[in-house]
Image 1 (tube, helix red, strand yellow):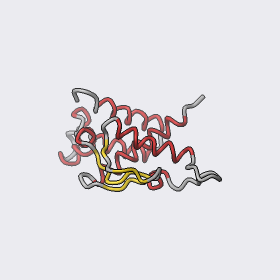
Image 2 (tube, rainbow, N blue to C red):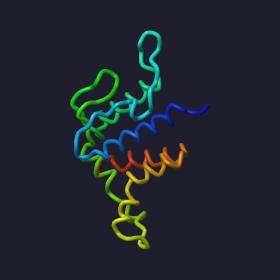
Image 3 (cartoon, rainbow, N blue to C red):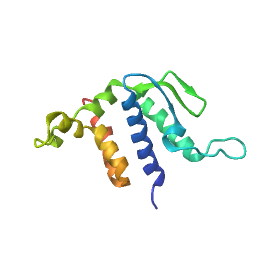
Image 4 (cartoon, rainbow, N blue to C red):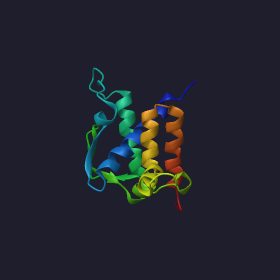
Length: 145
């Protein structure tokens, strides 16, 4: 049995981190709908399970120290949200073994960051590649890193 909710979680984490990286250091409003598109609530107005899962990923990232926010906007998103220093450093620091000496230094540096690896994995559409990169993010942001 496939764990599709975990694949969705990795996609949500990548989208959240990259959205905040693009606006760093400026705080922004992060809406679930901007990340996963519109999801119809049920007949009672309860958000769709997919919507709830993405929102929960946002809160989990905050609890784990990847992002900060000032307030929640119902279950729609987070207000005044930005990456923590730990997450910014994790995304912006190039992995030395990935720096290509054949490419100009500024381009090689940017291509070797986890932010670029997340972009590439999302664009490539491979859930396995995306899972690998997101897990690398979690490992690189651990204690002592």
